[in-house]
Image (spheres, rainbow, N blue to C red):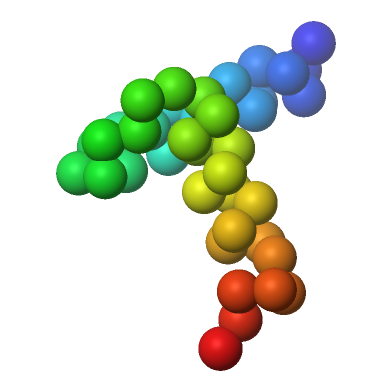
Length: 43
């Protein structure tokens, strides 16, 4: 349960930090996390 709660807190922080990008739901937040962690999008 502790891990789940930490992930929820993390998504809440991201939702606040990304509010200018207007994420519609947690899928948008998950997509942001995935792109940030993906080597595919490195320049």
